[in-house]
Image 1 (tube, helix red, strand yellow):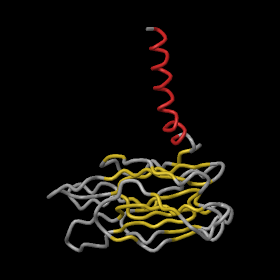
Image 2 (cartoon, helix red, strand yellow):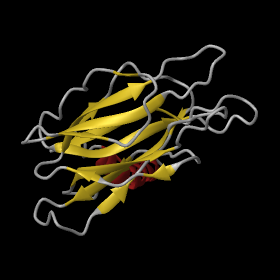
Image 3 (cartoon, one colour):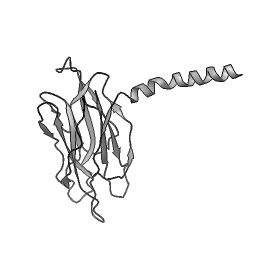
Image 4 (cartoon, one colour):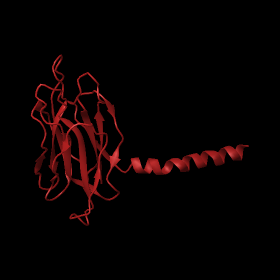
Length: 196
């Protein structure tokens, strides 16, 4: 009986090893503390092993006039292998809201995405909440800044820390589900992961 328990515990541990290994390849998490907290965190999505994010696109709902605005609805990272920067690339994204269109890709000419900043509209009380409106990145190496084609509500916060080694290789987004007749905000927060 004791031997059976030992075998079962070893089988259990072995079955969890790929999951633990897959989640632990990131070495550092980038966050900002000025986002809003409506909605739920989606799944973590990571670039393939050995690749890093060199570009991004955002899903944006344009100004709805007197309608309900949501602004930023999603973030997509474009991952490349350092040995072959011209392609092919892989895209990764976490939870995405249902409104808006994907913007053209913005990419680092050299280096990879290494730090980010959000443009956030704070809670509007009885007004129309949009939460996150736009996104900027700094490229490693050159220090070039890439600004998304988002909306203008709210203000820019401060830069996140930079990846101490390597570059951004994954993300997780916080998205509010559709509110029916209520005020929709869609994407409210994001955290990025760095890999060596």
